[in-house]
Length: 263
Image 1 (tube, rainbow, N blue to C red):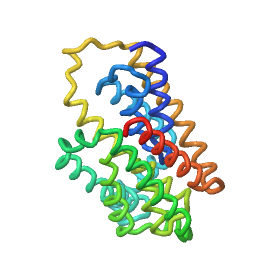
Image 2 (tube, rainbow, N blue to C red):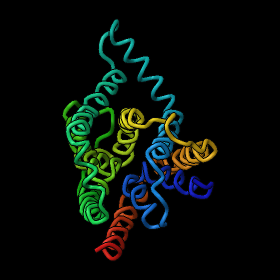
Image 3 (tube, rainbow, N blue to C red):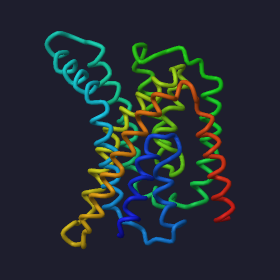
């Protein structure tokens, strides 16, 4: 893999992992549209690791507070930070089960037309949720039911083109959460999901049996980290003002282009 390929791969992953436009769709389509050989699973894992690192650093204070609250809950009883840890665990369970049950099926869905259809369909669902959601609640009002609903919606992300962040933000908006709060929970939820998914995929990669371009691997990770951190920061800063319409329009355009190219 040349350095330009590595930079573009890391940039695409970092920008699309947290915007509601589907990183998996872009990572599948990138080699097709650029006429590159598929970058391989190891580089996809490296790109996701960069995004994960950005999450851990950006939310380090929240994570430290939640971790301390969770530990303290065993001696001092329940607290809000401990509850949030359990909400993330509950919301992660459905996608873990679905990933194990349907892992082999997801390969059949890595098709440009499936991606195009999912991109358009879930763009319209996102628009509806943003348009008609009450947007009155914040994370302090979060309940177990919310974690269950968002977790079940997240299962749809096994369909390329759905967008994991997009579908979880959609669910949060449907439940009446404010845009920033729905997005913040969706981003925190990405931590266990990316960690588990990347770990699982890494088990399927035999690094010793392949030739690894370490410079390209580092470049993918570093670019993904930087672009993901900036995306998280600016998305949370601007989302209440911009709403979801810009991402809906982009998804509709992308879906139309994909249908034109591959139908």
